[in-house]
Image (cartoon, rainbow, N blue to C red; front, side):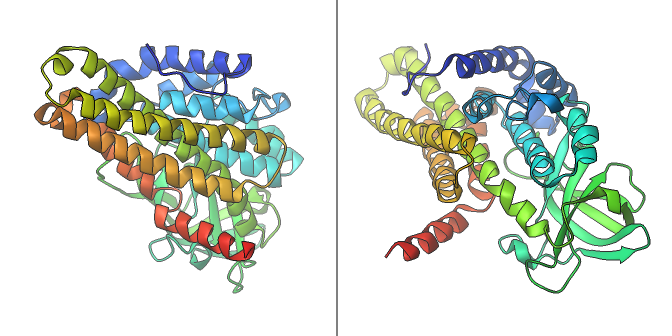
Length: 381
């Protein structure tokens, strides 16, 4: 039996969640342990989700999307995050690319590129970070030199989710000296001459989601593949970070839900029958459940505000911070209370712990989210 949350799901959200749950049980769960061990991302699964209409729920129907609410979109992200989070991350990141094209793309870009992404033919990747500018995104140095007919990109990006698996990359490069207005965004397709995938990181969590370097060596990008005006790149990046942070928060609530439900099943089974601290564990997890309800309510609020095109910057930071921290707390406790079993790979709860730590780091570390919130608080006094 699943946990109950409020407010009740609307029919379209319920339908999307049920479809996601069914596909998760069929396509993700059976190979979850193997995929995590082998750091394997299955692109055929992503295409299956896309064909089921789950990848582009918030994209207008004219471009192949579902034309539905962001409650539906984040609901799907949350449902899929109850297993290995790689697929939730890939859908969320592809939506950053689609969101950038919708907000800044010209009609040709929208009509030619969006259908490939919404259909699942293409997987998208978003690349802002560089070795020296992870937290300070405006400090990026990837050189984008204006040349005849387009731009020549030279430099290295890092920590790119879906790197190597993606078909198109939304990349920010420097076209001028101004810290923010000197940044321009580009849509770089896989197999473009001068563009290659660099080192693939061997990391603690999110193992099935590739994290790689992107290397550009005099990579020519036609002007038609510039996204927005020259100098708009920082705005393009900021326009999508809020959506990405809510997505990570939704991943956190999905993981936390799975961990709490697993602990409830343990307490009702043999573990609970022989556990001297059953009441203490139940009390602790009831606290987690209350916090989970609160974060899920914030996601619902932010989703509805996003549907109304309202500013959700601070809410997004709240959700990313609280959702990923809660995932870390719950996953720590279930591993701790299950003892040796909790540390065993086959039990699959130690993966919760590893993935939760990754959620605290990606899309702006939680320390950065606290800084964003603190800066906003200063304006209120």
